[in-house]
Amino acid sequence: MKLSLPESDKAALLDQLGAANIKFQHTYPGDRPDRQPVHTVYGGANLFKADTCVKMGEIALNNLLTYAPNFVELARALQFKNHEHLPHLEADVAALTAKLDAMSPEDRKQEPAWLAYSVYNKIVAKLKREAVEDFRVDFEDGFGNRPDAEEDETAVRAAKEVAKGMSQGTLSPFIGIRIKPFTEDLKQRGVRTLDIFLTALLAETGGKLPNNFVVMLPKVTIPEQMTTMVRLFELLEQANSLQAGTLKMETMVEATQIIMDEEGRNPLMRIIRASEGRCVAAHFGTYDYTASCGITAKYQTMGHPVNDFAHHMTKVALGGTGIFLSDGATNVMPIGPHRGDKLTFAQLRENRESVHNAWRQAYHHSTHSLINGFYQGWDLNPAQLPMRYAATYNFFLSSYDDAVFRLKTFVERAAISTLTGDIFDDAATGQGLLNFFLKALNCGAISEEEILATGLTLEEVQTRSFFRILEGRRAKAAK
Image (cartoon, rainbow, N blue to C red; front, side, top):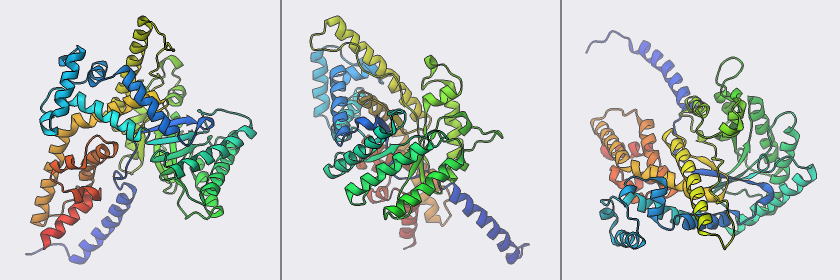
């Protein structure tokens, strides 16, 4: 076949393009398949104990069982799909529950009450097994500005409690600390607390950090604050004989200047680059951000439109980079106004209505975040945990069938490309579809077996990589 282009000219052009393509792929590697916690719980450093996460689970479960003793109560409070068809009488609720309990998972899915029943039972199981996925020992807003001696003592005490939790196996799977920001007036305090905490922790543990340990740096506005953290990490690693690159960090999006700088540009990518690969996540600070937009306290809520603008700007700036994104927190706590053992019927009703109202706000806020691609958010009180999982499980379970169809179709398309020898270059899209199931699996919404409906094998799912799945299938096809 006759061609017009000399092979040498074509090769030179494609080599140049190849270099640019590789640079782009390095900058935008796609979503990370690693486990991302569905939430981060922030708690004052002065209150943290080795068993804090365990006790939070107990409180959360008690809150759920008190105000929704069965799945029908929860479904009605949150208006789950088909809630209007659920029974009202206790005897009828008990009969329906017994019927669903006795059914196989496949048959149960055919019942209108399946979703509500499944979400509720998964919440209960999660709160018993692993109520808190991520905890941040907070030396900033949750701790406040205190005398230096008090913060020093708290840093040592909190470090020892983390070490104790490590030995007892009572820590959350992800954990870290939030220090004070590197603003001009607080930078010294932030550095000192970080140094004291890590030095005390490593001394207690023989040089070991908890799994998935991270340092949150709040109120970042300029890249130099991130660079300073990197240099401090290097010094701390050297001083404590840690492997280079061990310490990781997160940043916070909580000021207008981190969405648009003085030149009208979004500086988020420059801020992430300044971390030199150490930054793993960016968390949105709802209330500081709305305040920076001039929104008065009464209207500083998760649902304010200025937050959606910031969310979308963050998604656009950091999409495809592998940086995990987290939304903020609902500030309405699901706690009844009346306390005590001898409450009147009217007081019990007021408590129930107050808690259900707070549940609905948290549930809708979390669902809104999930719909907009934020798979993580903040919780501030153990009573908020049931609604975090209610929103998360409802989101994944109600989207499961559609996601199965999309990934199955995509896998089949990839298989056809493999068998015909074509190059299938949509692995990033496939990874995004696969990540839906990996996120659902990580939080307990689905089991590994339920992913098999996509046409993937269990071994392929466990690679957590669509690219590796394609490589494996190509290798088999070539034999």
